[in-house]
Image (cartoon, rainbow, N blue to C red; front, side):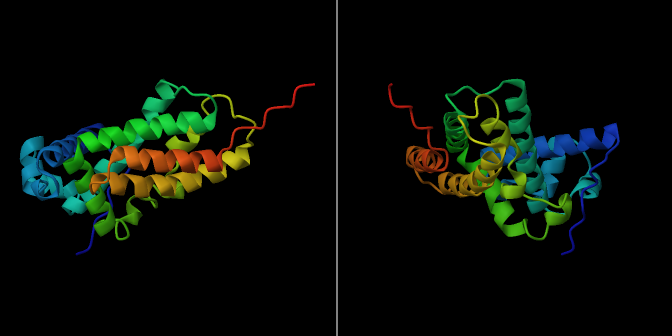
Length: 207
């Protein structure tokens, strides 16, 4: 099936319809998982016609990927409004990872549906905006977390490279949690990765 590319510059009315479709998809997936997110069911929940829904998305996978990207955008916006706390970039990003992974564990059906769609349709739907998912090219919120306070002696180039690596690791972490691995186990692994990538600066020896 040929997938339509969602129009990124929308009129206010079309943007509102798209938002309703995404919110309906999130709600249905939260309650019933991937199989609950049919286009007809989403259209009914969003109170739009099925043809109108198909003007915005051509498949459930495209809609769920749109929902995944929307949640990522919200994470970035939330971080900009309320800077994360922590002693240095490593501590900050570990705290944010922990919060997100715990949220995912509380809504396993939703995140399982989102990542099932991502794996199934991500490659074909990359033309949505040229970039899909949490790969290095989508590390905006991770990079912003790293830079949200004291840099701990690390350079901007260091943090750019670390953001790309952590973005890939975080994708694997989310898939792990949504498929049943204990969040505490995944959080421990991510914390270890962060410590190795962003070691604390050595303390100066006393004079």
